[in-house]
Image 1: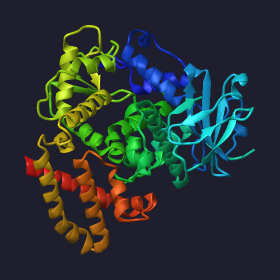
Image 2 (image 1 turned 90 degrees about the vertical axis):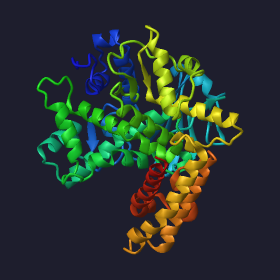
Image 3 (image 1 turned 180 degrees about the vertical axis):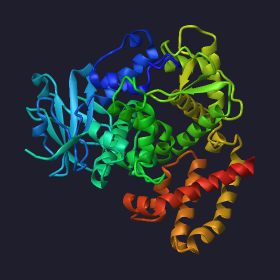
Image 4 (image 1 turned 45 degrees about the horizontal axis):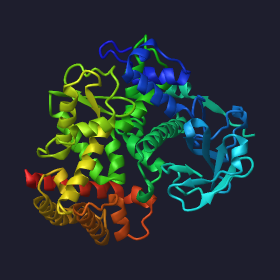
Amino acid sequence: MNDESRHMSEAELVQLARSGGTHPHCDACAFCREQLLQLRDMLGGTGAAEVDESGTPAQFRLAAQSFEQVDSDTRWRQTWYLEDGAVVLRVVEDRRESALDGYLLCAPERLQNMQVRFSGIEECFRPDSEGRFRIGPSSIEIEPMSVLLE
Amino acid sequence: MHMHASISMAELLDGLRRGSLDRRLTDVLIDRTVQQARQYIQWLIWHRGYHIGPTGLSVDDLAYDLIAELVSELDGEMLGRLRHALTELTDAADAPYDSESAFVAVVNRTVRCNIARLFMDLNPVQARLLRALRRYVQSRASMQRIDSVGGFWYARAGDARLERPPVPPDMLRAGTVAAGANGNPVRSVLDACLAYLDGQDRWRLAVLEHDVIDLTMARLKMDHAASGGSHTVESVESGDDGIAYAALTAALEDARDWVAARYVRTGKLSGEEADAMLDAILHYVDDLRRQDVLGHVSYLRQTMPGLTQQRYRESYRNMYEYILRSIFTSARQRLQ
């Protein structure tokens, strides 16, 4: 705790966000609480302290995979949490094919009727039975786009 | 399965602290710094609804730009500024965080401080509003700037009651809509926001920088619509449209001589390249006047067809942005 300002420093809040912990101060202080939530949101996709010495960018990794099974041919590009988290859409770059793939995670029975639209792409995408669909070349700047489910 | 040796982030940062990183590990740490900046920028882009598509820049381009000084050899040492900033944070014996958390905090703070550069590419008007706002607050002892993960907050000097919840943006918008415009719009909006917060005891006595810029942009658009399109964006800095445009074009004409002396005659640019840059800036200034502006790089691409982002970064960026900044500085001096 930073006594001078009566608020937690960003480094302290990052430490809490990384560890999944909290602090009594955050219950009483909206300023620190909202920063902790923001950091949890921002750092949510990370946590592994290991770094590839080759210097390649962060790789997408499914939660069920161990670190040894990381596929260096794919790279996480963006995740959208939709319908209050009931639907999660991840876009991953397939480096071998220089293409973007979407993975829709939701109740399986919804997949057959679901279509995905991105704000910057005209085409509407329909996922296969496993929720996967091919979006297009990896040069597409998918990150800032918004997503609409139909 | 891919087998590769790996090193923990804590080991990397320890090596940085002791000055024992070799060239390869230095590169790894630079990559990790860019990754962290990228993650933060993506978070900002997502939460603020920024669109980088039209600029032709990737998120990595933006990340490199925002943390360049942190990892460059500026003070005679690669990563010198990162090491210095980390040392400041981690030297306290009882610091309740580890070096990796300090690292994330340092990178995030650097991105926030340099975020106006991002807007130079995404939205030049927003970049200028942001700089005007920061200059205004820095020059006033009666105000303070408070750093946070979500951006800077502005408040009057004293207790900003940060523990309270922030006022909802819609309420702030409604509460300040009747405020008059006194001179520079971004200053008027900030003053109106703080005045609105003064008279209540429920909300935080501070306003988020992003909200001030948003409200100012909305106000400029309303003013523009109300004036039938004659009110121009140059009022952002000057308060007087035609005079500001004239000052800018005069500054641009003056620039032709010193650009020739400084860059063409010294062989740093060909005459054609210098002309292309000045023509691009002229188009940029014209579009600024019409409030229909792209990023300044887009205009250089128009006058240098086929210019790639890599070529721009390697060969032109420093000179082009220096010329552009100098022209705006010169125009401001003419207006004072």
